[in-house]
Length: 116
Image 1 (cartoon, rainbow, N blue to C red):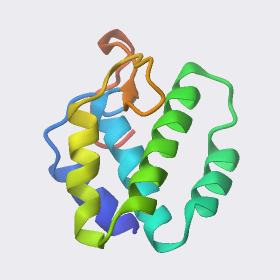
Image 2: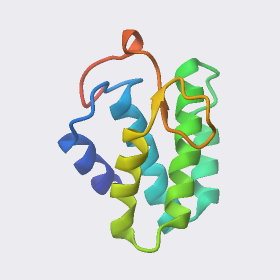
Image 3: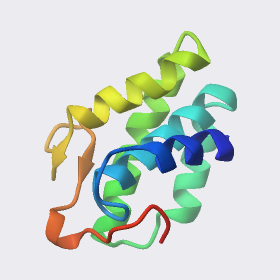
Image 4: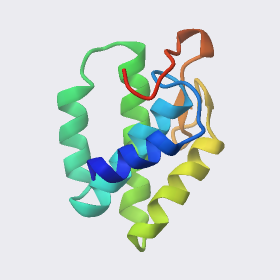
C-alpha cells in the first residue's frame, strides 16, 4: 500500500506537496487503497490516530481521507482506485464546501516538495 501510494505521488504532476493538491491526492489515494484492502474501519482508525491535531490541515486530511475511503469501498477492482482518486482531485477545489469534493488549502499555505 505504501509503495503503491508513494509511487503515484512521486510521479504526480499535482502541485502543493503539503496542504495542496498533491497532499489531497496522497491522502485520498492512501485511504482508498487501505479501504479497498482492509476496510473503511482501518481508514477511520488511522485518521483518528494521525489527524486529531485540530489544525486546518488536519481537517483537510480528515475530509480527504473520508472521500478516499469511500472511493476504495466502491471500487470494483484495485485498478479503478488511482484513476478515480485522480478524477476526484481534478474536480476538487480550495476549501471545498461539498462533503463529497476533495479539498486543499489556499496556495499561500502550501509547502512545496514531494516529501516534507
